[in-house]
Amino acid sequence: MRLLHTSDWHIGKPFAVSRLTEQEAVLAEITEIAAHNRVDCVLVSGDVFDSRAPSAEAEKIVFSFFADLVKRGIAAVIIGGNHDHPKRLGALRRLLDPLRILIRPEPARADDGGVIEFAAGGELARIAVLPFVSERQIVDACAIMGPEQQWYGEYSENVCAMMDLLSRAFSADTINIMMAHLFAFGAETSGSEWTFHTALPYAISPARFPTSAQYIALGHLHRPQEIVTSPVPCHYAGAPLQLDFGEQGQRKRVILLDAKAGRPIHIDSISLSAGKNLRDLEGKIDDIEARASEFGDDYLRVTVITDGPVPGLAERVRACLPNAIYVRTKSSIISETQTPGSRAQAKPLELFQDFCRRQHGGEASPDLLRVFSELYEEAIHAAE
Image 1 (cartoon, rainbow, N blue to C red):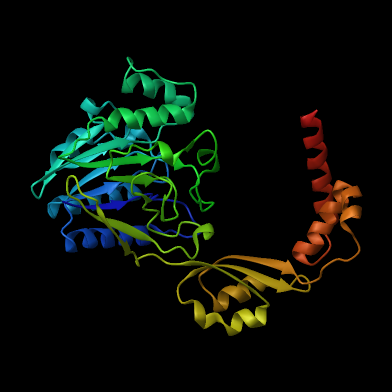
Image 2: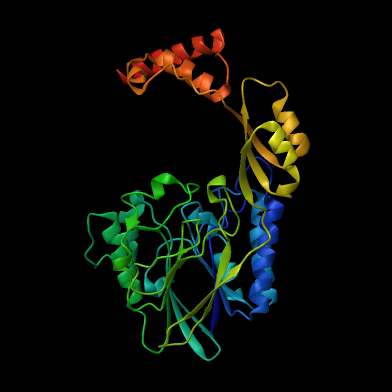
């Protein structure tokens, strides 16, 4: 049996420019990869949409992708991520299940959709699915998963117990896959994920992942990576596009799995090329203009080093770099008037003035200083 693992599409994610065309293109690329490699089933491990209330355009892109899979005879298993609205994502489940587009937006018992059986190529796969569950919803999820089970006070212990419960369906004569949307302790983030869902108590120890699984397909983190501390092969597929400048340089991919019951799964990464790269560029304006031809159609975050304010600087940058999404300045003048000790003794207004000099290469206006002082006073009173 051949499977393809992808994740964290974040269709509709806001950016300085619309990226819906790129997102549609990369999903089309994934469809072609699946068809070319004769994939039996696509595994989507969460965060299909970026918003819990996606636009009609975003929904059209996603459901067109699934329609293309149906036309090609390729099945799919999709779980909900922390960005997906479970009720909205699952609204079409009764319509899509008969088409072998199997959406599981919320945790469920094994016999109620928590373990999916899928047959192809003379093999039977059991895919245990654990969509994202928030800390505030963990009690309800535990009740759904098994009121007769012993549950725990800690979020991570409960998630591990859920995986153990679902993995009981695995057997020696089936292909055993665990798919989950969670934060594995020790994994590398990109800074583009929601920070409060990539910290304690959401960190799950990979050592607790079920050893009866042949492969663990994770979603949640945007950086493609293997979790080497897992007792069984375990990968984050990562986002298919560079979603934020924190992801620049990442090689985006999907994961192709060749699986047989009772044997190690063969794992292969296939690079994606449909999306634009995001890059940082820093230098003086003359150097930036001289290098403009190096960056193609990459989206750029440009930092111009200046000796002071330069009128029309952003327009000058965009004249040679139309894909400069952000343009900011950085002073080349380093103040030597303050030592670390003197900064510690400085007043807030003095620190703000120094920040303006270093960041913008000039003095803050009286109006800006007045607004800063008013806001600072409000913050002090609010803290009291």
